[in-house]
Length: 419
Image (cartoon, rainbow, N blue to C red; front, side, top):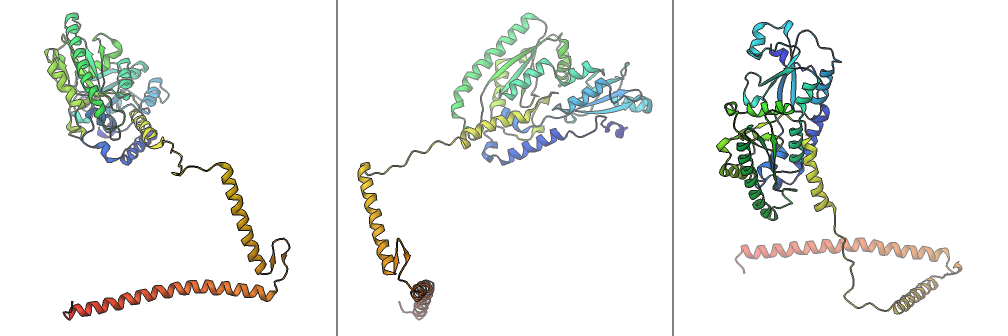
């Protein structure tokens, strides 16, 4: 049974996703270590470092599914593009009743093919929290929804957290809780904005404190999977069907925990804000509360953009250097020309005298010098060069020997007790 579930019908490894992840990991390793110090806020650390956990899905069918099946092809494409979902399959015809019940419990679907969804392994293994028919519309709903798209867009732009407000259906309750939530978030954001000037951009580029709220109706069919995902993330949330529920989402789409009914209070909201914007005390993701949502978002590219901008501003955009000038007043241009002309004439005169003394003429070339004279000049140059090397070596050796002799005499006197 286990072997069947481990067979991925959409089989090949997503090399593009794995390559992106490896590049991102290498890039982060090369960053200054101070960037990951404890001063990094939780929401930003989670966005940069906490890879989303994978949901488990099992395709339940009777007989083989054609490879060109529209739903199968669409799901294959979706899982290859950033969706944190792993797919396995089970064939009812080749599986025993015990195997099926052991996997699905009493939730065996009446209509096949169907797809069942589990939370990531970190939440333990239980019955699937959602089962639906396997078709193209189901696959689209699994991969994304309007609210999840908003979550991904806002979080990748750097928001500290997006608060999903699940309406109760009671207008008065929803209005009171929503107004309180927005008021506290506005006050806290204003306070945090005043602290932004104290954030060291060289350590955490692009950090800004901003929160937003997105409301979800319990009757919206487009958000059925999101609602089910959120309401089953904690064991007792289904009991509050007539109460508003708030889910703070941060990092790479991680739902922290639920605030329910009277739990949507100013103190609880502020406590949650303090956790999200406070220093990352525990870097191990599994030791922090919450569950990742099923979302198709290119998180790595979003994080890279923060650092691309950072390096452009701090490392690549060099300020133009000021032109170096003399501390002395500049001479007039005419005076400079006269001095340069005088220097050139002097150099020409000296060169002419040297050429004449060697029997040379600057216009007609060699006129008086014989072969013997040329050889004599060359010999003198060799002697001078030879003396330079030998002389330098001799002086150096002499200095070393003198230092050794003087040092030996000094040590000898000290050993004998002479001052």
